[in-house]
Image 1 (spheres, helix red, strand yellow):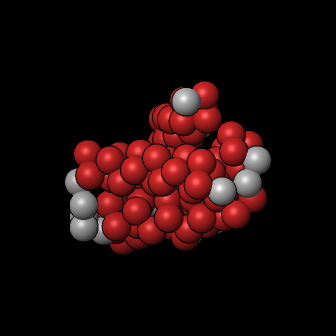
Image 2: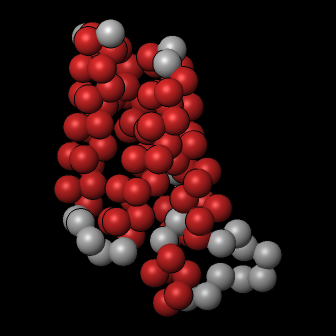
Length: 111
């Protein structure tokens, strides 16, 4: 249960505390199409990658499993991209992320 708690806290810290507004808006291809960013502003995929790798790093730190951190980075990017493309709602996005954390714990317990 300690690991699950660490994963959940890490998720909320990364998604809400460590995600500045520039990243939240910048990671969306749709936002960058609607309002072109200023010159030198990183493209959406750089913001999305940085955000997703932050999540992957926290999963690695919480579990000690590099492969779970890598899986989190990829899944987090996919889920957030789907949300930014209006494919899922904010609530669906959060549920998907939390289900990933439960999945990681299940994988750890099974090994």
